[in-house]
Length: 330
Ligand code: TRP
Ligand code: SF4
Image (cartoon, rainbow, N blue to C red; front, top):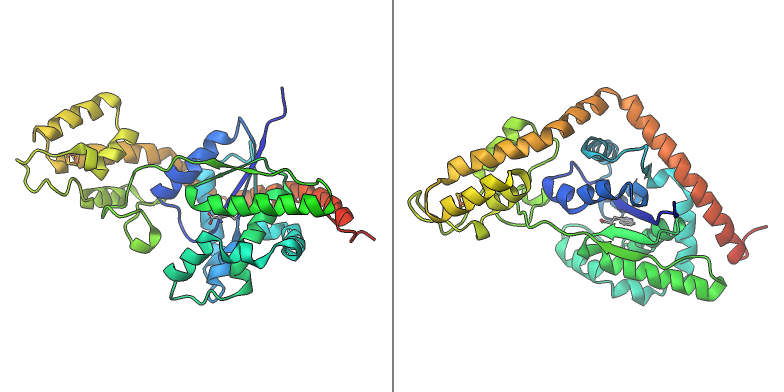
């Protein structure tokens, strides 16, 4: 067998994962475990860049995200799972990369400019927040990852990573490959209020929610906004419930709903009930695994200790090369 390409990706631990996170990222990661040599990690230091004022929730968020990952199907037998801060070499590489990264590269980072405006309630005029992409670059090139599965919002960060890698190689000799973003298809599903699904909008359906909670949220979902009465024909093409149907209902039923909706032969309440059933059925095995890991916190700890140790071996290897390259190896 030829060597599998190495990929790496991470998530900041900011709370339970919702269906948007799952379909937009996690489901893709799960499918990459066999074709790629995968490293997935919890970016806890990155969480601190914007939430340094209140880290109280962090330990819990880290635990939650690990439960979400494992229950959804990341398999420690088939990928390396670790926590960023458990591989302190990331901090050392970040430091060294900070020496060679021009500040204007960071100041013109679209994500940076955007976040400063979006998160007005936080004081983000910190060194650490500006340096966010440098830490991310360290995360990626530490493992000499060739691919980085991310959503479009992260493409500028991968671009900066490539520039930093190229600059390092130019200054000190070839050490790092330039990684490429592997764009994840973002699903068209929205939150229950038809805005982008987001924790902060309070419109999300979570992976860990009970069947009753999921059902209640589905029943609250806004459908085709033009469809006022049951007797009005609807348009599935603009209906968020229908987008979920495409993922969680059998093709025959989807086709049937498509016609019936347009002819006002099915009401939204009935339609939602069918969707909720499909969604709940898909979530059931995830919930089952979640219960297992919830009841076995030691297993979770072992998985993350083992993964972090494995990641650290790779990181230590890379750091030897880096120290040699920058002449800090005496
Ligand atoms: N910045 C990423 C996000 O917010 C998280 C992240 C940190 C990451 N380091 C990474 C993603 C390295 C991919 C590779 O989603
Ligand atoms: Fe959407 Fe179904 Fe209502 Fe049609 S019947 S608008 S697809 S919820």
